[in-house]
Length: 363
Ligand code: PMP
Image (tube, rainbow, N blue to C red; front, side, top):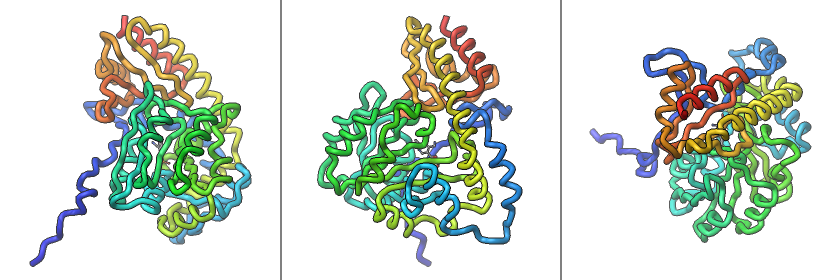
């Protein structure tokens, strides 16, 4: 009898995505500040829509028409130029698959989101990692790696796990210097957390350029990570390609209904953004006072802060110490950051407690 052959070599080379933990070493439930979820939860209007949507025997609208219409109206984009995904992860994967394959290259920056590597390998393309500039995206270093095999460039703005942010001018410079046959994916999973005065121009670029795809998610500021809703926008031909290969019924009835209600409740989004900005600023300020102890919170435009431990106190000790007081955070030795701890911005009380503990450990 013939045996099932081993998977394709590029599939076997993938390191599966490792999500943030939600339990401590002994299985104790901990307050989870490891996955960049919204500490304010979900909009009450979206929660109310969940029960009204229950129709589990029926397939959902395959094209999420109402939801795309609402998103289009909110952002001033024709609904036809929006594609929905089961989380923005699905959009990242199908973008790589649509435009790259074996022999092609996909570039992203070191300390970038770990799904880019999986998305590149999954379609047989070669992932190319550009050096960072002090944990941020270095546009010139990235451009230096572009060649005739380059098909896709992934840039998260703000970036996860560093929180770094490229201003509008740098995004425009990157796009202008890229060949027009390379797809630039601007991943804005944390885009709504950026002060609107600092808009990076990504959505406008997706509207005007023929080679830009912007991805966004409901998992972060909308507080709907568990329902798996993401979306992308770009030129008609990009959206057409992605629609051919996305899951046919990729958003459940419940997800579509909750998403629709969440889009209508922009007050929740504004409250979440303001809560995050104020809480993050205070948290970072307290940690900056530990500079002479080698504790360095990186500037963040997102709903988390990456703290580097470059002195006597190491990240693992802090990770374990925070677990001892009831918090699970994200220590990143497997992403080349054994000295880095990424902490999601929680409530004011939680962040004060965490800062108190880090200060206690550092002194
Ligand atoms: N992009 C970035 C930069 C992220 O951090 C995440 C979530 N961790 C995603 C995309 C994917 O999120 P989702 O699939 O929940 O939309």
